[in-house]
Structure formats: structure tokens, C-alpha cells
Length: 158
Length: 201
Image 1: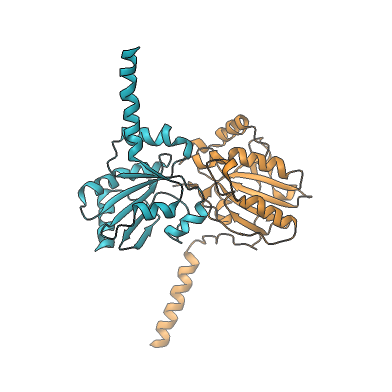
Image 2 (image 1 turned 180 degrees about the horizontal axis):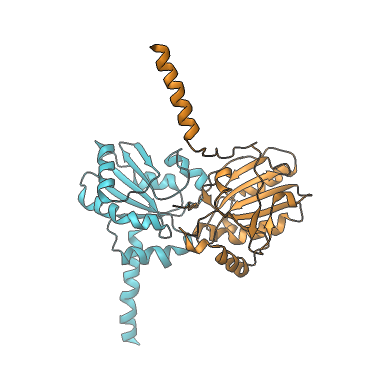
């Protein structure tokens, strides 16, 4: 019995560690205030979900941007379904060893918060937002390579 | 010379517009929607004109594969059950090209409709002629039409994809209620969230 506990305890613990890394917000405005408001940081924010195939495909480019482009901070905002947070999102992050900051946004009232991000957002993902000194540059598009993404970001922050 | 160049501009404009294929303008509130004749999973063809005594139509573009659309399957089925006796006919249309998304083939539509016990015609937009005329871009994407096929509401079904029980605003049902009582729906449009429609490549 004791051995079983030894076995199970670290397993539980590892789940907790992963879970702690992903802050959860049920409201976009709060998320923006808490996560995206440092005036000295340039944020590259990617809206995505594990169920969105084109999003998953471009994720490695954002991971590379986060590690190689030192002038920006990448934040990955997951729009996964609430009941898939534990079953899909967390295992995905672990499996892919995602290093960028991941935030889970459970705010499903899209018609309220999408226009706060950009009035041009039709409602599809992936979508990418750059925030520099409180100014927002929004793009509802797919980046098919790291170079394409990096060029786009550099063009918009310099 | 000046006249010649203006003439050239006119000719160029004419040529350009003449040879640019007309991308249809997406429907706006108040436009008259086109009827269609599309095959359903029961093998029959359906048109809105078949429903002579209908008070209105709920046209929902949806599909098999999209996780967002799946979340709404039961809600769409419930809407169809609830509003048919009231005279509002729900017609679901799969707009996707199965060449791009094999899960959205007509054969698999039949399978899905049976699994989920769909009570509404689940139509296949063969050749993708209908969805561009409506201006649908997502699955699910809902259009409410009155009995004369005038567009009264365009957008999302409600404000919570996660669960029907957490919905605060039932956009589509509110619009039906407004139509029923002769009022203007508020809002008349919302953003439809979901998967992009898969066009033939």
C-alpha cells in the first residue's frame, strides 16, 4: 500500500505542476489587465485551441519566436472547451513541451470580448495580436513558417 | 490625349469588371435569400418552397467534423423539434468540400444524422453553390428568414459554446420570438464563431 502511494503521489504532483503553469481566466478584460499590461513588454499573443488544426500547425513558429526573438514575449491564449482543459489541453502542452506562457481563457461570450481585441475579428482562429505600448495590431491569419511570422512581427514592432 | 486616357480607363474598368468572376455579396439583414434544392440524408431533395405554410426558416450551416459544430448538434436538434410545431422550419446545410475535409462527405452525414437522431433535413451543398450566396463563413452559422425568405437574423446560435445550460443570451431564439411578435430582432447580427468553411481547392 505504501509503495502504491509512493507511486501515485509523484504522478499527482506532476499534474499539479503543469496545472499551475496555466493561468485560467473567465473574462478577457481581466486577462488583458493581468497578463498583457506591462508597458515595457512587447507581447505577441496567439489565440488558438487544441481542436483547431491550423493553430496546432503554426504553434512551433510561435515557440521558436519566443525563444529566438528577444524583443518580444509570446503568450498563447487557449480557447479550448472548458471540459477539455484537463483531458486535452494540459496533456497537449506536456506532450509538445510548450515553453511559451500559456493562458486558458474560458470566456465563451465571444460577441462581447472579440471586439475588445479587434473590431475586425470575424471570429476564426488562429488569430494573432501584437501589443506594444498599449497599441494593438491584429491579424486573423495563418503563418506558414517561422520566417514569415518573425518578419511580420519585426515589421510591426520597429 | 486627356480624353483618350479617360477612355482607356473606362475601357480598362469595363474589361476588369467584365472578366472578374462575381463573388456574391454576403446577405445583409433585409435581403431576400435564395431558395435551394439540395439533397438530404434521407435521399430526398428539399426546398424552402416545399413548406407552403411555414412562418419562417432557420437555415444553419453546419457539418460533421468541426468540434464547434459538434457542440451545437443537440441544440440544433432541439431547436428543430421546438420550432417545427410553431411553423419555423430548420434546415441544416453542410457547406464543406469533402475533398478537403473527408469527414464531411455525404455518406458520413448520413451516419452522423442517424447516430444523433437528427429530426431536421441535413442537406449537402453539393458543388458549394449555396453557402457563398448566403455569405456563410463558419460552421455553425445561422440565418433566420421570414416566410418571404427575407433575412431577419445572421450569426451565432447563442453565447456559450461550452454548455447550453450556461447560455445567457439565446440570440437565435430571441430573434425568432421577435419575428413572431412582429418586432425587429435585437441584435440582428452577431459574429458566428466556429470552424472556417472548407472551400474546394
